[in-house]
Amino acid sequence: MVLEEKQKLSQVSYIKPCKPTDKACMLASAQNAIQYVSSGIPEFGVIPSDPLSINDVRNDDANLKLGFRNMKIVGASKCKVENISRDLAKSTVTVTMECPLKANGQYDLKGKMLFFEAFGDGDFEIKTNRVKITVVQKIKSVQGADGKKHWKITGFDYSYDLVEKVDIQFDNLFGGDETRAKPILEIMNHSWKDMVTEIGGPIIKQLLSEIIAIVNKFYHAVPSENFEIVE
Image (cartoon, rainbow, N blue to C red; front, side, top):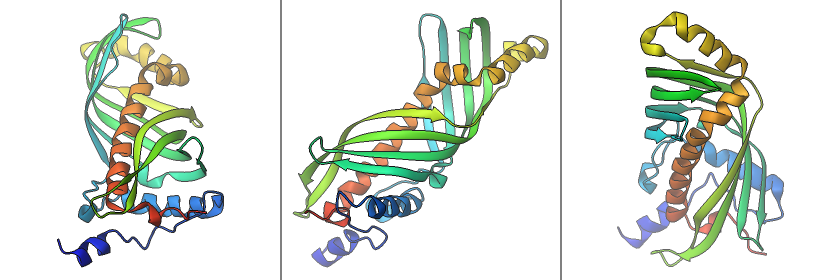
């Protein structure tokens, strides 16, 4: 690739560089970036994040063996950025978003779920119209092959708050015995916050890990001068 083509790829009109103290600018720029990055940017090697496919997630402990496979998660492109801040001293960027998310695929479980013994293997769906997710990205500056500075996410912490009810459906519980499955499903949907605490954490963590990898691809392709105005 000739130098002119490299420079073209490194310039993105939909990102506006902002001062670290200009929250309004950062909010607008981050919200705009979501629409582009979630659709995928082939020239940057950025794959789509909505929908996002995850092959396998497991949450096994002494009391419950639970796995999800062939998962498809939709909703990332509809996330609304509510807050964003950059801490230069700690080299972090903190983003809070509210998203509608739906995950479906197949599950397998065996063990105690919400104090009830259960087993099953079949299709599942978990969805909510509003979940608030806060991600703290640990950022460092590296020199890219283009000779310019680029951001790189070296780690992240996260938290989430379930703003609205989460609907949970597990098909084929107890091998398809609907009489045994019905009270369990009712309890799961009545105690949905406890249920998500028990089973949802690994899904959200894996989702964020995949998205962080996608964002890192974007950062690798686009110099940090597109994001920041150094004061």
